[in-house]
Length: 419
Image (cartoon, rainbow, N blue to C red; front, side, top):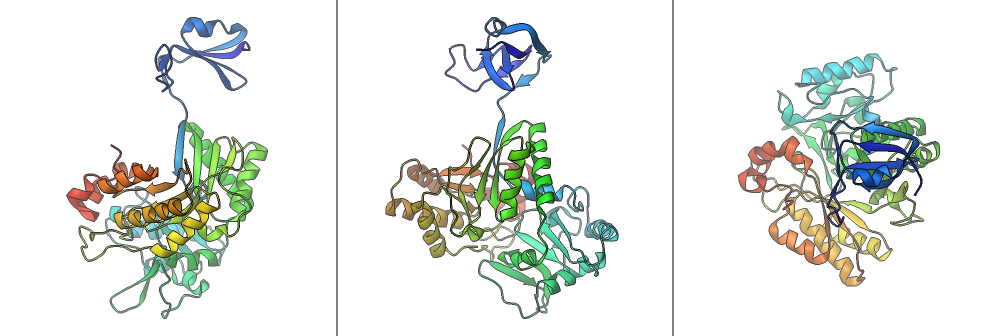
């Protein structure tokens, strides 16, 4: 063991390793060239101190292993850090959103698109979705495309709809919906796969901007103690290239795993596990349903405040099963987005079909979010060896609204079951 170049002392070191002879806590930590070389009692670690060792007094601070973030959308978040801020609390009502977008339009050359994310209708004083007419107030000279905070709805002005070729006679795609008002006119609000039509019509971020987003989120992760992140939906070659560039130039400073999204995967020349400690390929991502806040999560029982609405499948159940069986047979881990309990049933059916057709030990297939998982579904997940990637932060951000508005007291009180 080399002489340490840094010694951290006078802190509370939690290793989270109960098998340690002296218990999971320690008195000091030593590192050499950025790597931990010893954790233990002060006497044990002092043995590695030399004349050039820097001693860092933590003044009683707590030290934990780095956090592992198992489901993020880092590039989108990084890009949106420099976009118009239209979410709560930056804006409290639709007039504020329009003003923020109009200010961004004044800074943007005529004809160039304005894209942003973060609108939450349930936190606005108006308590409604944006419409094309709202966005037209911000600008008719720029295509405007706004994503809902859930990521499962979006809003477009007339210019953006025109650019995408969307007219009043457009048909709803499988797994999506173009919302209309009582007269049948398009409102400009799009659900799930309907959003793709506008999204693909707008210019994608350049490699330079995408790489900058990777760096921004990497730096943000480190600032809050996250040392591993997961991009749960990589959809374009530019996104892969940005991560690779981050490894090469050192700007990607956290371990990263990426999930190819099913609709852009095609016949990928790799599968789960390829890569190294810095950047690797994880699960293939599938989306079974939508978002509880958007009323698109697929529920067995209707929504609390809209009992006639059950949400819907983004990928039809039979198609999901076929794709999951194929991915599993090809050696992939799969990660299936499923918020509603009906969607969780579909995800478990697909995984069980895959395991029946092609038994595999330690497959580590995942269900993402699992917000309304029932007790019988948790038991089935345990039996199949399926991992639950639980959307626990919803309890903090939307817990009260899930209980009082979307799901009701019974389902809302046990959302995101962790124990």
